[in-house]
Length: 47
Image (cartoon, rainbow, N blue to C red; front, side, top):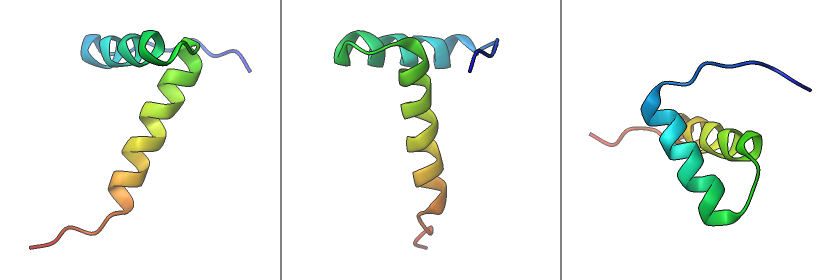
């Protein structure tokens, strides 16, 4: 599926870093960052 997105500069930089490090496409890198963020939200905070 093709979608146009505007990424904040720090998000674009993180995706580009991940893309180069793992030799993956930009879409896959953005998906991985999103999955990581979603997984962190599911982790309960320990106070």
